Length: 242
Image (cartoon, rainbow, N blue to C red):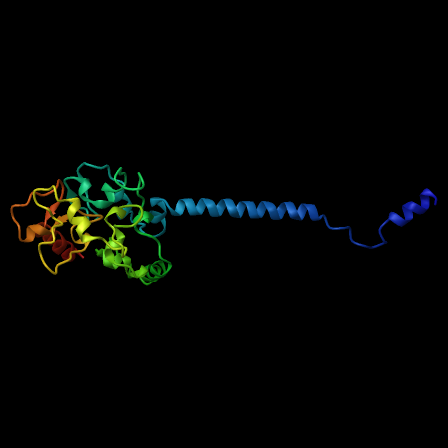
């Protein structure tokens, strides 16, 4: 067979489109997938940071600025009230700690995202019912979207798991024993039938309250904490301002 015949057989038919460059399309597809993967990883990392909460929802920065205050210093609560020791606010106290499973606790370690709750809050934001700062919620309120007991907010894997009982809730006996060396044990179960929730005393974004002072006037306050009477005055003032 002559060289001329070979060339004729190899030539494409007249008017036919050139063969697609499949390798270029594959490269483009790989690049797109890689960009999406990197963007997804970056978004997921950002989602874990307080700056995400500040940008997406708590845009007035009330909570993030509160959380970001230096520990063991004079500061302000989420309402703008002065707090003599920022460690009295659990958000600040837990931001950096050696007493938990993680050296640094960020927002989503405690406020675990729940899609139904996010949708609910998003709807409130769109309709103008999302207020700043948020109305104070108990640990029961915080856990209702997950159908869990309020005390499970504090005895999760990242924090006070050592106080957890077999049912996943706080073990009241373990809790009482954890503070038994104190002159006045605030976790004593001497009031039969009364089981206070953690957040009745331990406040995340305002000075914690020693509720026992409602009856016991000889109890020493932890640094920065307030009495029940002082707490009631703070909240009454906040309701009037609202």
